Length: 336
Ligand SMILES: [Zn+2]
Ligand SMILES: [Zn+2]
Image (cartoon, rainbow, N blue to C red; front, top):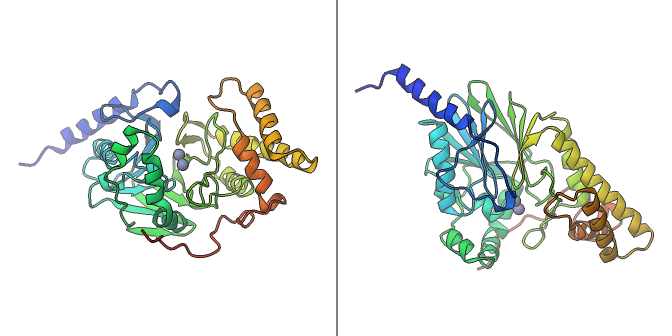
């Protein structure tokens, strides 16, 4: 028996309207946990956010939907996919990931098998080279992580691209997936949704949060390459920004990120030129940030200051090539 079209549309509308009434999230974003009973917040006409650590974005077009990030491990991936199924029942599902870290990418096997997984090739190299080492490192952090990550097996992507891919979700909803260079990792991916002008910014543009280049597994970007990425994002004129580990906001978050990174970098370069040690510069710059942003959860910039000292673009001697974020040689999976 066929379900009457009108009642189906009404049911979908009610589901979306109920989601739209969710109050904005509260508390420390690093303590947010995604659960299946959460209510997503509507960020813009076609974009929803499920709060968590990280936040998960869901973009809905007339034919297809896309989820950005998976949550920590397959069980979280199943929850994220469940939200997509509620917001976009019966539609084709795409999945992309902001970067290769476990809470962002290691839940892909929790998605339905016919989900189309797409990501940039630099990030894919990081998944293959460092993904499982990073999962093992995360499992050491807590009993909870050990449980969430015990069954991780990364899926191979259905589609990879280098610097940009456009995905048409139908009804005029166009998603631009972009790799603009290294930042928090080498393969950070940025997602921009038209016509909403909504940027899903990963760990690259955050809200009231210090930048952190992760080099424990994988190489990460440099302060200079990160700044270049944010400068390129300015050209998009985003009106809404959904970061991974902080509160969503408007387009001013991009300008604030550029200013924050630019200022830390300039202060660190100045101290380096005056012969101040990297440790001392980290202490002084962190103290100044604490004064300037007393409400921030973390103002310890020592790691990022050290990154500035080592940045080849500002006279450092690390292995990274300035501003490129491109691995100097193709990465190969490590032997087990
Ligand atoms: Zn990360
Ligand atoms: Zn993250």
